[in-house]
Length: 204
Image (tube, rainbow, N blue to C red; front, side, top):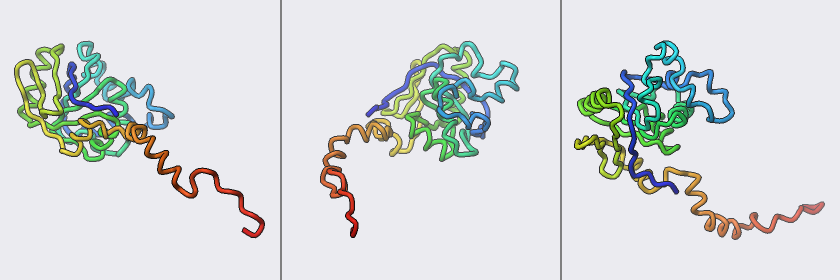
């Protein structure tokens, strides 16, 4: 299983509140068969309307791995494509004032930590990134803090989600693989498991 203890990288600040999942990934991209390629379409309409001035188009934010957002980020429909599109673009963690509940759960399911911070601390992060876009930030999930140079800003995360990242249990596939021996042992004891059931007779 994949434990996630901290994420370090440059940040991309996204101003505004109530950014919904349709803005993160427009509905026309939901017909894709896989999530591959969604990163190129993240915020597609917003980026088109901004004429290249969107933070995700800025050259100095390319390669950023932390997203700074506002209040109620990820509201709207429950599409799992939204966190997938952000992850495919390169985002590995999000710090916002608050998150929509379903979006938060979808992020946990793919190993994308979401932490909340007080408005004044988020503003401090936005200002610091605007002045020094190449400065590295670290989201520390054990300490529940964002480290910015010598500053340490507290963040919050529900205890259940925090423990899932620290223990690696957010990874459902990893849990199944880790328990494969036990799964096979139980399956072998089931009367309908192995060997295969004999075909029924004519009277059966």
